Image (cartoon, rainbow, N blue to C red; front, side, top):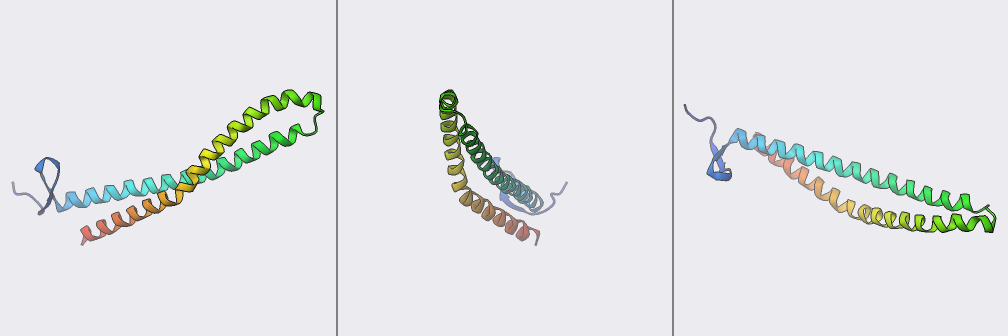
Length: 124
């Protein structure tokens, strides 16, 4: 039975890929790249929402304890201090992640653009 398409490059194991297989591979790579980009965008939204939630929680924890008399406030402060320190550590980690998101999203965008260009070129 004759083969369809022209071999255009070699796959792993030395097998030749025909043009349709190469288009399919490029298309599925594009789909995965878009999915990863969308995942990064959702992750960025999560980071923003989580930072706002933590800030609100820390503020509310401090504000609610302020009107308490000093004698009753000591046990509250004793438990609130390590809690707020833990919130601060988590917030620092989230801020660090958020700072890196710009580069990560830009890289994902470039990869999607490259994949789209490859798919378009293979369709011609």
